[in-house]
Amino acid sequence: MIRYRERCRTPRASLLAGERGPSSEIFNVSPPKFPFSGYMVNETELSRIGISLPQLLLEKFDEIITIRGYSSRSEGIRDAIRAYITHYQWMSDVKGERQGVITMVYDHTQRGLMQTLLDIQHDYGYVIQASLHSHVTHDRCLEVILLRGEGTELKHVAERLMSQKGVESVKLTTIPVQG
Ligand code: NI
Image 1: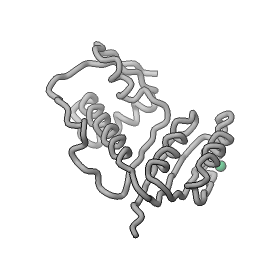
Image 2: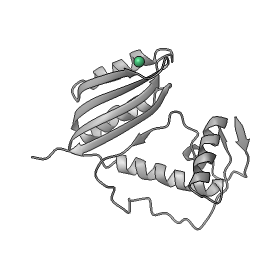
Image 3: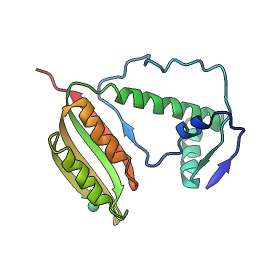
Image 4: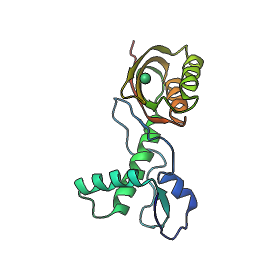
């Protein structure tokens, strides 16, 4: 772990800044609506926070912000947090009848994980149409799940899957079902 310390005035913000388990990404194929309610916050006042990150995660982040030409880590982290908030609010917008696909990557050697993921999928059997499993490496699996149903239900499936330890990423893509 690398720890870079800064004065901490807003402890809750450190949670937002990425002290979280698996990376997850959720989006819809329709473009997001701006501005999101609650997103237009006053950004003129700055608070300093301290966060701890796994070394590998920080190295990957530094590599990306270098390629993208950010002047500082802070600027990159601010953008990452904005993107996280946007994704979350976009995800909250998934409503109505939808056809969707979840792509999920996980470590099948994580104790009990495969059974848990299977149980969750059975809990939502009424919206899950099919799934496809591919063994990416000896430890990692890729699963593609096809769903159809109320958008909020599809979102719940994705959220439950992504909150499990050992799940590396979960991405939900949906399209509205018309007529
Ligand atoms: Ni597998």
